[in-house]
Length: 505
Image (tube, rainbow, N blue to C red):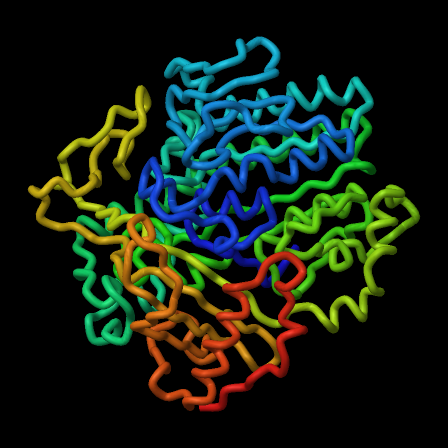
């Protein structure tokens, strides 16, 4: 397990594009374009032809399958590199629609499933991916199964058979952190709408708690898929030749800084995620502490298969994972490890900081409806409600008539940021540039707000210390961010950028 794993961009489609390509956002972004908030500013012509799936298929001879959420702005045709394709942009929990190719029992093109409970989206993704694994295993080819359920994304609707599930050992409500329903005074040093969000009402609090519980319930189905995939591979006798990775595309907020739900911000709860791995050479229960993001996944997967790409901005974490050789590593994996420095040297030159980059997408208002106002028809259709028994405690996008609305972000929420975790350093420095990437390119040449936090003393990032750090610290951070923002491929190496800076306040 990774103990310091983050995303590079805390929103769905950019994060998934970065995962697929091993590239930072500035090497994939565009100005303008079609789709929801201009396709979340991703230039998909740089994504679809350059995925790790294509490289594994064309250079490694792998059978490749994509199952579930691919990117939010879906291509009109299946991108190169995928043999099996059951994919959408997230879609619905109930009666989902998928693009299809090479899926046994389904026509190529698109399939709209009915609202029968057996067609709950995670069940469809899990059952079809497992069936494909069984089929491809019989051919003897190596395979990649990219399995990406919608859960636990909005509107957080669990499978009907888990609708009421709540283990007695689980908490009664979401974590009530120091910055949950934070005062205006405690937020005045923060950018944009963070400083102006209204207080959380009783109705909003009930919605947040319901969402918290329903998110956990959606993940019960994800747990089922993970268990069944691992069991299937074991029954097929392939466990000693298979790597499993489990991660996410962003963190989440549930009342932090008074935002009821969603992500998009630079703060720890939106950027820190999990990464668990299993396979030959990985000791059960082992951890590694080196810093990484999902941009490092593509070079890692390719490295384990004995492949590489010069386009990647990330780096392989294989040396940190494979601490127990046991003599059972595949030859391709061993060749990858042999191509890298020894573990001690690799670790000594590994980055001590992470780079975040994001651009305003939309205000994404969450308006809390009255306690008995309905906004859904669960279990027959997706429901924007926390109480799914009655389809009550609901929320909606802003239409102009709602009395209590919370803005997820505003035009100030374009940022590049440095997250340092190294010895005594545990900080975040972020520069903001107001604007709209959908209209004009944001290049961070006109920074209009800065935030700096010492997370050792202030883990919930309530005290912006940007005006207390010396000018030379600001200059160093700004230059360092520019190094990251301009990097590509092998130049994304902070070890080559000169001395590091330690801030003492």
